[in-house]
Image (cartoon, rainbow, N blue to C red):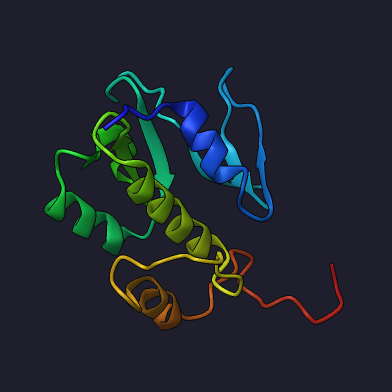
Length: 146
């Protein structure tokens, strides 16, 4: 198996709808509609050649339990719904599948063509159970107001 790198990540992500590269601390994060989806793991606690991927907490727990040699998390990243991926331990097909599921998490109404969920309904089920978010101002915004 050929070790993957950020060029492989870029190739996969830039083939997905609404994806673009940005800049952050001198590195190139990948964002979907302005929301961070994946980026190089640059914190000193991360292993070299690791990728940070936004994913649901439930799926992260499952990935860590099933494949701890591929997926991990450090204290620095643990408070966020992300998983760290050892690019040296994952194959291209599995990485694509993970990134497609991450895209679906950010935009459930627009599934990526050909996306194959790791466990059918798992991410969608968690998103469906999530109720409306609370506004920090304490009162709902009236329709049409800014």
